[in-house]
Image (cartoon, rainbow over all chains, first blue to last red; front, side, top):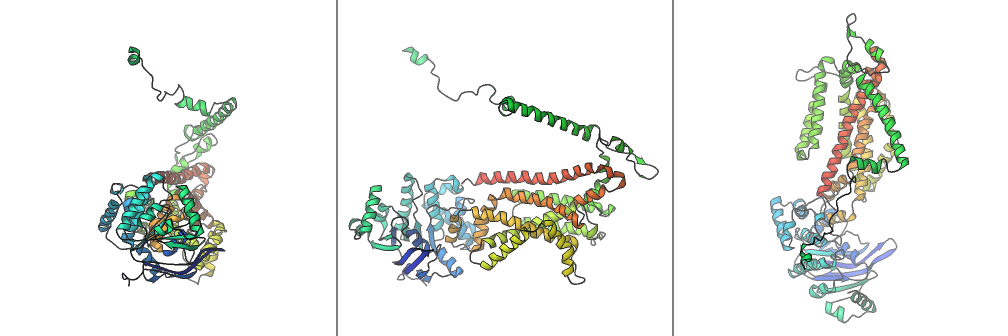
Length: 250
Length: 380
């Protein structure tokens, strides 16, 4: 079904409303396999909604979204399949507090992929080692720091061996000293060739790994380009304003 | 210079508590006698407490009559001693005489060992289920096996046991059957109804659940029991008439399920939305999401109100008294209708109260322990 020439994600003129509020306006986007896209923009610009539409945590009302060649519709079985191919990392980690770190990671491989427990444990330990916290495997999420929890969340998503990873402001809820450890994990993941869509304000991260940066404002993609084009030669007033605000903050 | 090395510099450490900050005397001073007003209230309450406690102990233990002699003429117990002590001392002899009737009701006297085994089985089942190391799939088999054994023992008719029709059952086994079956069947129904009421993409199911909850919750349990015992048979075809206990049982299950469902819904709503989204994002199907992620957390959150409902329903089973089912309370009531013991109902009701209290209090203590254990493993 999928092949290397087929784009990982295609959005065609996607529109979405929350009641009267038009949160996505004619958003079109194609993400190639292996491409890293960073989405930025002021709060309320629709960037989180956009990324949440890609695995249908939000439903769009107009337009088409294709993930790995399959269109997102109300067909729940197809949806579960797509979701198992798309990993998602949330701003607030959303680990399962009643399960250990290891169980958090093995739950989906065992119950969705029908993997034997021993194999799933080995897989989980492999990814926990990759995010550098194998020693925490038998603790509960509440016993870990925010940065550690977010790295577990990344490992949990990776245990499903997803083709695409979505990051929804993964560092926004973290204390400053923990942001780096999570970004390092994401950079390592990017270097391994994963297709990634990240909503983030970490411009350093965007410069380092992004193939393309999307700037959104008021529900539409205002400008897009390589990090260098976007950050050094912004074309629109809105992006210039946004960048000046971001840089003042840092 | 030497002073610098020899002088002891006291490090500001934790100071010793001053005298009488800890200990029972200090506690009493801080909580009971911290002002003139509170001292007066304390003394007045202590006076009444001691007075009534003393007179209760006097009545229940010191001046009480424990046994009465048999009247040789009639072969019955002679309650003269009890009548003499009436008003000053309790007559526990009534319990000695009637305890088997209170516990087992009209169950045939010589077959009551079967009902006694049923009680032991029930209590064994509760204790086993309470222990976390038995929480695996086999526990369901244990339940099925025990409950089957209980019905075989109660009914008989096989293995050389005499057949005992259902209307001869009575006492504590009935109370335990009604409450155990009631809650065990109501709980899964409640989970489904709670999920149904929260469902967003099945509006018809949601509407049905809402109607079910609102209708049953809006009706008193007593009227539901009346309907089950009086009205229901009118609609059934001739000859097809499930027995009264079963009908009451169904009414209790339907009623308990509604209350449990609302408690569980509270737990479902209290969970952060992120938990649902994380489960969705991993590709878990609806039932796996609910069974593995949402319900385990939601049910832990609502242990206190859940146990509250359990205890309430354990006691509410006594309402079957009004439709003539012989539960523990009914058999106690009938026991004191005996002309010999008519004047000594207080003693019997105290005993009934103690039995109910034992079950309810163990449930309550157990749930406290469970909460503590869960909060140990899950620190948010």
